[in-house]
Length: 453
Image (cartoon, one colour):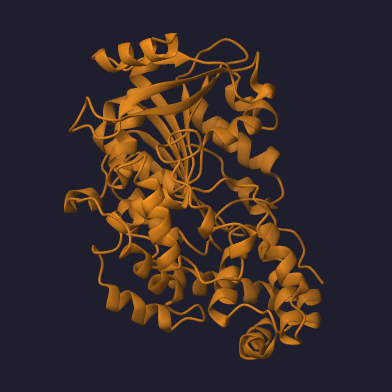
């Protein structure tokens, strides 16, 4: 039997999860990281069934290790976390000065039995309707050959995170989570409160959010704020009338050859609002689209393939943990009152008719209560996880503080002072373990790029 297979079998047979070292797949990590995997059962009710090898990268502390390890948790759902290693090796090196950084590809992503659906993403699907049911069904049939698609939800990810913690021999850990990663982090804090010292939750998505229930409503709020920013900016105001341009662009799309449908166009505009760097292009994009020029729109929204997104994992999470648990008619009615409509809801609900669903208890959606120190970072212009969600989460965490960055979206790309304000703020919190006495006044100077003209 090959050595790797023997190690895997030994890990499964042991009551304690085992970390198995392997060569780092990325050459740049060699000599800088410990790479390997922790094997866990795909279905914990069937411990001798199919295993999943969770891909794990550990970046050791660069100086004396005085703080608990930081577990990084990315979002999506469907984004692999180990892709963030490059950040911690370069611009984010200060985060590992006195602690190791642990990155895990959540099951269903990256190199942890990825549930990829190439037919649902990439350049070929750029202007196509989202999640065509026939393509979803084809992807399901392919993935079912290697995965039980009901076993890739949040609760399984929480159990996996603790298995990795055990395998690496850590007693207490810190968490840094973004977007859907905050759902995992919150559920982990609820299940293992004694294991978490502090947590940073960025762009909070509590389990009760049930995305994409409020995508359109959150996006409408963010769009109005963005247009108000344009109106308050003399240059943007003199060049553009984004409200009128958006209406004219949507009305003119059906007559443009090769153009996306109005619904697809609006969804793409929503995605551009995620980051300040692309949100500030929107008035220009809408102005050009209003006169029939989609070149700026196409350039900004064209898929680059830079992110490896596991659509199958996204569907496994949202079809089980969102649809069926909220009032669809009410959500769709609210969405139809916005300029984004109920397109996203309708497309995803249709996709979920083709996807297996796990049973999720109502307790899953309950607010998380924990005594860990928590710093919540929200963007006021976030089109998907609005600041109110951060406030709702903080209400149940007695040692939490929410900081709202006025000009940020869902992510922070493009904001000024990331290295002189944002990172020092987080580092001070991690070092002190107390959010209440942090001086967060510098976030007022985290300004966005100028509007594109």
